[in-house]
Length: 353
Ligand code: F0G
Image 1 (tube, protein in one colour):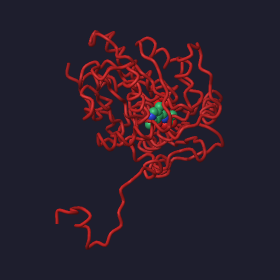
Image 2 (spheres, rainbow, N blue to C red; image 1 turned 90 degrees about the vertical axis):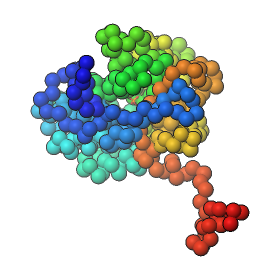
Image 3 (cartoon, rainbow, N blue to C red; image 1 turned 90 degrees about the horizontal axis):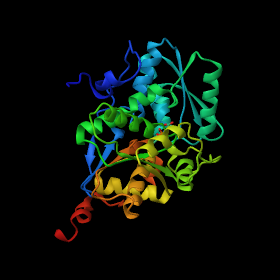
Image 4 (tube, protein in one colour; image 1 turned 120 degrees about the horizontal axis):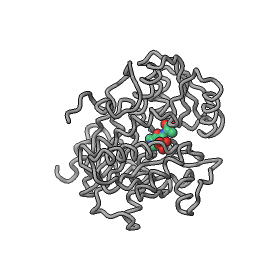
């Protein structure tokens, strides 16, 4: 059937909810980049969204819902990307927005975006989980505030379109590898595949594989130990600040997505994340922020432990753009040479002149 609309709203018929006003920045329809190194592996580059992360897919739906339901105030706790996206879309909608951030723990690019789009920035001492708790309490006590976090199901309705786009591009992969923080996105993507399965449009759901950072891995560790419920982490720690989350709100949904698709979760170290980020950039030409590089680090780890095969079709979800976190990029080993401008020919051509 021919689909009307663009990006996320191309799938309007399957996005639950009524929207009499749609607030869009033409999000979605992101590149699916074939790996140079691995023949059957693709990178879904969510950094190409309007504010540079997959959050825009959910935000266009959530903000449209807020506006359609006549809310005037929106609020989100964030490690940075949700904040940048919420700030942009609420500006476009003319809504008053507040974002709650863990002070000093948000990557520079994301903080700069939030300032640029003109939201009110509320900082709390402590981790993202504390910020998240305060937003949930605010919402429970004052229903006139519209919450933009991923416990809001309309966010996930937008994010599930990642699955629809992948299927349209390359059919059903064997593995979909997703970085996990608050654990909404892996569930949203699984939901998309599952709907296509139930609709008879595909014949299987890919294994949903979650990747966490070692110091913030309650879900991966729970699955590893066979626990029914994760042991939450009080002081989560990783350089991948986007997924520095100790108490993922959507843990139940994420575990359901992984178990029912015969998937699983693993964690990677900060060193593996940095190495993967550089490998992605230097061998593939793809710039992803550390949390996204964690997914690639997980993919490499699973290949070397033979938990997945190079011959399987895999999609690695690169959730955010490298520019989000300049402090990490600038620490990388670089070739920088100071020369007299008259001598650049010698530097570039060496013996050839
Ligand atoms: N990758 C990036 C770049 C993210 O910003 C996030 C979450 C994730 C992965 C994990 O997605 O939470 O659905 O499991 N960032 C949130 C934020 C928490 O506030 O921007 P998840």
